[in-house]
Amino acid sequence: MDGTKIVIPDLSVICDKSGFHENKYVGVPSLIIEIISPSNQSHDLVVKLNLYMQYGVKEYWIVNPLLNTIQVYVLDENNKFKLHDVAKDKGSIKSTIINKFIVDIEKVFS
Image (cartoon, rainbow, N blue to C red; front, top):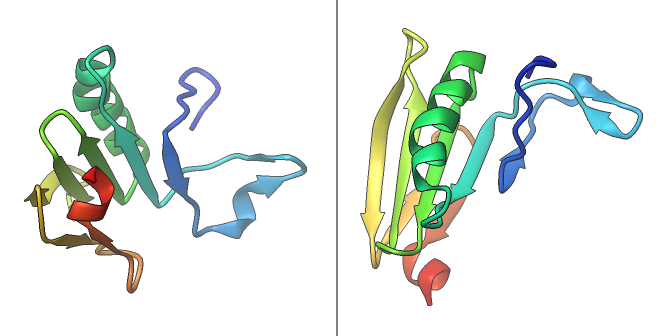
């Protein structure tokens, strides 16, 4: 991300090693996961979603412990986030870009 907008996600997955320089990473993560709390809900659902979409994050997960949901947004061919999957309370959800990355919903919220 450029110098004017720096955000720190709760969790990010970086697949492109070329962005590592000394003790920092300069670039866009492939996958970002944010955990919603009442104090940051609108920031994560609107501001960060739009910022991540603008910079080309391929996949954005929103974990909402208040609703026991995980939403997965995937960047489409028009560089817009589309809701790919939603899971609530049980079942599993998987990444579209990281092979075999599957999350058990019950384990996340237990």
